[in-house]
Image (cartoon, rainbow, N blue to C red; front, side, top):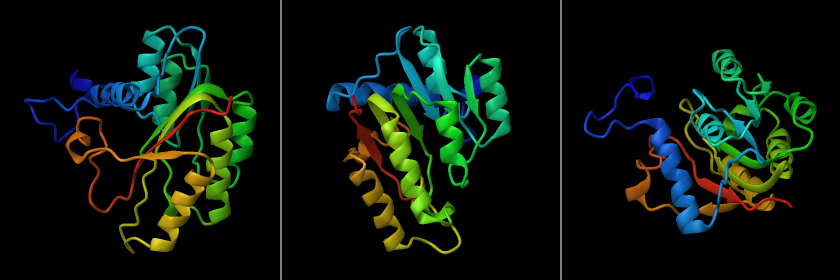
Length: 206
């Protein structure tokens, strides 16, 4: 478990990222009826998995049909070692992402998970931001969780861009969950104050 421990972890709690992800899935199931029933007959798309906390849990339940996307080559290499079958080394803000994703995962998946991924300030073409949200939303058959990470540490927040980000999600059918502050650390969404985020869920397009 030391491998998963964050640098500023509270020794009494551990603050293991994998535990926070599992807490989140349990919270969504119990409070909002969003169920990720990982198993051999299901499939998963994970964007920005980092060290693979979610897809590894899915693999432990027998799920093998996984498409992961990460701009970090090291995390893609780790996913390869973990025998993830479809790995896309790409940044969502790149103009060619949508075409690359359609090629890599043409059939979509049952479940979608993206945590701390998608920054409105990183997209030069704001229409491309909306296109990414729309495309990935259409790939979800059963349930999706998406936690964007909007931050511009140089210029601060711009209300028009944050409104664009939220409207892109709402118009694609996502629902923003009002999570009690007392649960933010428990489920791993205790981001710094300069980060504008939110926990969005989708019921799938099937």
